[in-house]
Image (cartoon, rainbow, N blue to C red; front, top):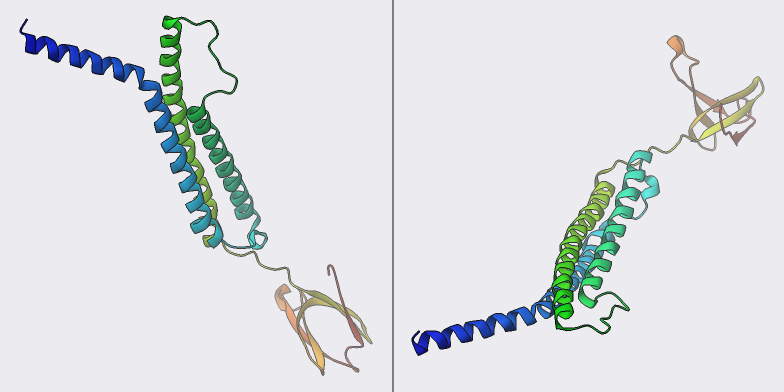
Amino acid sequence: MPPGNRAARLRAQARVQDMLQSQLEVARAQAEGWRNFLATATALLAAVLVLKGRENVADLPADFRYAVVACTACGLLALLASAFAVASAAHGTPGQALVYADGAALLRWESAEVRRIGRLVARARLLAVAGVLATAAAVLLTWTAPTSDAAPALVTVHTPDGAVCGELVGTDRTGVTVRVQGRGPDGKDTLRRLEWGAGALSASPAESC
């Protein structure tokens, strides 16, 4: 074998050995990079999306409100699980140690650790994407959901002929206007204007009519 080819093969073999020995460090560095990316993505999500969502979800209809809560909870859990996975990949398992290990055991542990880090980083990536999408979906729901209609204010007006209960339409110094349900022709609602004094003695809120 020519001396030049032999020297090239020796250099290549030395590089392979160096790469094999540095696999664990490379995997740790990749995990650190993904951990930094996850922290940045989570901060951007909080600053850009969450802070611009609707402030009060209590005004949303019940279905939209439950969907927003579910998406937010799933997004938070996914991001927490992603952060835990990438931290475990970057720093290893607490308390893990090789006791009375020989060279072969060390090589087997490094190989297994590299595979474990790869699985954790892949899992963290999927969980981070799922968490961001779930949280973004919750914010989009708050933007697009209609507001729930407020319950009409009911009032009982006491008159010389008895009590009149209905939805309060308006009131002023001269009287009160009430929408009475199902009292008109064909069962339709009717508006009644009751003047203070002769037509209306007093009015009070009512829970139901």
